[in-house]
Each structure stands twice: as C-alpha cells, then as structure tokens.
Amino acid sequence: EIVRGPIKNHFPIVDAGLARVRKDLQLDGNTAVYLKAVAELRAWGADYSGARSLFQEAIEIFAAEETTDCRHLIEQCTTMLSFCDRNLGGRQSPMVLSVGGEAPKEASANRGDDEPSSSSGGAKGRS
Image (cartoon, rainbow, N blue to C red; front, side):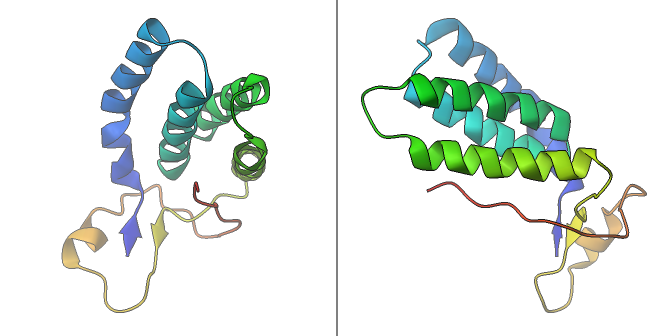
C-alpha cells in the first residue's frame, strides 16, 4: 500500500525550497518545473487548494516561456488542476492506495482517521 497522509510531513522542506526559489531565481521554465513538482507533492498529500494555486502559477510561467516548448507541461498541469477540482468538489481520492500484495504493518497503522471511503480520478506524472 501507498499511504499518502504522511506526505504532509515533507511540506515544510519543499515550502522552504519554494521560498528560496521565489527569492533567488528568475521566474522561468525551470522555476515552473519546481512549482509543478511542489504542486504534485501537495496534491499527493491532499492539499488540493495549495496544489491548485501552484499549478496555476506554473501554467502562467510555462505559457510565457520562450526558450522551449512547454505545451506538454501545461497540459499536465491542466490535468492536475482538474484532479484538484474533483477532490475539492468532494470526490476525494483515497489516501491509501493498494498496489497489490499484503500491506506492511506500519502502513496499516499509519492510515489515520481521515481515510476516505470512495475513490475517483488519478494523476499523471511529469515527463
């Protein structure tokens, strides 16, 4: 099983990185790739509102990027915006995903009380 809840434990470190990126780097395609990665992590950790705003910001930066074709990255971010919207609309993705076989005991113990009972949607990875 993949238990998504503990992913939230990593939010502070990526937020620190995000603050540094925003402070020290120009807003270009490289910055947008980092924003997209942070947004994906936040979506995995069920912070759909935070993920959504980062995907929107990444799309704006990708759209302005002139040195490379970012259409595929914009498409991925748009797909993830829809994923976030579905979850914000109450169609929650499961916080524990079965990947076959028997779950490790520690995964079962870390599920928490916030595990939703219904599932919907999926996320595409970054290329």
